[in-house]
Image 1 (spheres, rainbow, N blue to C red):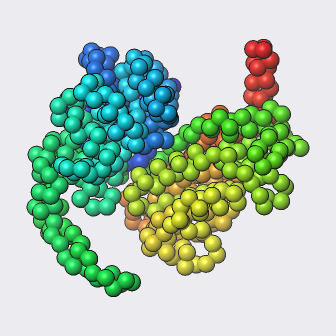
Image 2: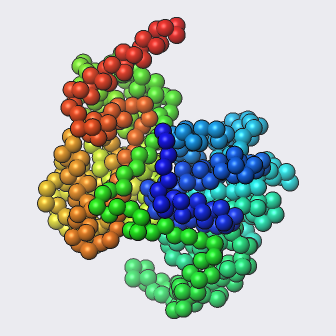
Image 3: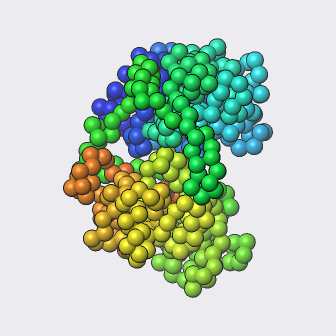
Length: 474
């Protein structure tokens, strides 16, 4: 696929070119990944740099997103990248492969630092979701950030922090991230100095336990001073200034089925049968097969026709949703699900979540910002329901063919309602999709506004072609 830079991505690329150590605050769905990869391709192909780059990201993002984005865009295909995840043996093997870019997850940073010891090879570090660095302290602190500390201002000559929410819990989150950019010049050489300069403390009494504790509070002038001090290294991409507020910003989050789930999926897709740990499942028709494939793609397959029991096959979509909720950093997230098994698993994974029910107080609490994650079946979020005050982010966890219900639940927080309510903010729509599954066909059908029958025929044609290829290969 050919890539065309959007104006704000050009702005980000220019900032990267002019600031070797910098932070880019770009909202979700803004295209941070492809922007940085385009910059890296420029560094290696046009500037002629040779030292490798280390990209650090949350596990799911490190495992799939960065390499998927490289493979998606034609101009990035020559950028050599290696994923450093998995077992220790797999990680050591990956580090032995020649590449321009190595992608690792935050949890493996202490291992990486121990592996290289004094032979640290990376001249550039890119930290995706850089708020993970907030736990840095001059002494001790979070192990992940501490593992990068010895090389940040010795071997590393270029450092890039990426996030859409640099201070989700307040300005105290900034010190660790900023230290990696300038070694403490802007906000102080130590966290203690930072805290002493811009924060005070007050005694607070807990309303439930009646215990008192000390709470830090930001001083009145601190907000302006901190912003001014980090301005030379940080740029914010204002979503309202660059996105079309009349159209939702749509993004697809792809996940890979693990081997066991992929085996079950292929069995159902090709033979209308899959052997699971708790029993065998089969489909008696093409429609039944598609239904089972959708269930497997979402993570759990029903064992019988009365939908009372299911077997969990993977949590890839759960992990992807955790990433979205984490990046939202406290902004409410509306989650659309389809199957009862989805709802049960989501409620178990997100204890703070609420279900959109018939109680009008649920809508009131959502619109008041009191519900961080609202789980809704599209059929329960139809015409007339106003949810726009509560947020502007919706995630489709699982997928179904009904175009009208799909559009209606988006409209509950949609651009028109946002504008009518006086909010100048884009609406972000995320589709969590299992790669090479019927998920993709459902979305294609909705996008193209084709009929269910046409899409099913295409699905059967794809399966037939796949079987023919397998027969030829054997």
